Amino acid sequence: MTVDLKAYLEDRRAMVDAALDRVLPPESAPPANIHRAMRYSVLAPGKRLRPILVVAGAEAVGGRADAVLDTACALELIHAYSLIHDDLPAMDDDDYRRGRLTSHKVFGEALAILAGDALLTLAFRLIALEAARVAAPTTVGAVVAEVAEAAGTDGMVGGQVVDIESEGKTISAEMLDYIHLHKTAALIRVALRVGAILGGGRPEQVEAIGRAGRALGLAFQIVDDILDVEGNLAELGKTAGSDERKQKATYPSLHGLPASKARARELIEETKRLLVPLGPAAEPIRALADFVLERRS
Image (cartoon, rainbow, N blue to C red):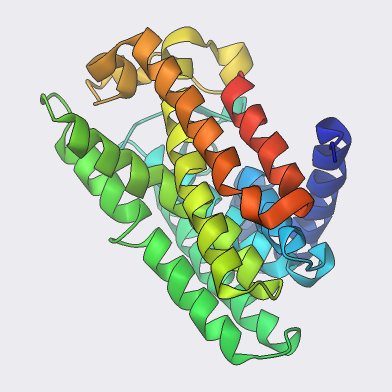
């Protein structure tokens, strides 16, 4: 079975974008400025990788895309909140994101912080609402716990903390993997896992897709590190070279570009091997893995 990835991504991205427009408060709802800020960041052009992975995870175990859309949106809201906060002057101090000015440049730092807070809060409300749509509502409790772990100090936030603490320092390869696995891979892994859980996947299917998600997430961040060296603003939608300017620990800085590219390829092959037990239904995830390796933004 082969997948027309371009058509698949266009269809799922349109589905996710329509759902995001539906779940976000309208700009006219008071207080209008916070809702404008939330929509500005979330609805900016993007790959929608994390919500698409939720959908693909559900489909890989026989579930339906429309049955997991709210949780898919929740993962995108968490991702957007993290980008808003990452871009703040106290963090990475970036001016551009997804090809346009960052939230704090448009709305000010205070409103940007609150927009991120509001998106994180709304994300968990959306996941909770899935209880009305699944056969076993208690399943949603497990999904909430998994997403909270992936987004908190055992995942994304923890990785970000160690990343900040490592700036300007020489760190080990093991510590760099820790940063990438927590800061980036945790949310990609959990996107696939919760999709499979809500899609009715058996425990062994959820476990297999989670291992694949871990490898995919690490590959994604390595490619991100490479693009920060080789990319440009037009391609990336953000300023390239920021990692070097901030003296961040990255794969190219520690291992060099050739070894980094080789490691990313190995991880993508590992992702596809780990998906073998899921059969043809996981073909979109395999195609997405190749997309992650080949992307230029």
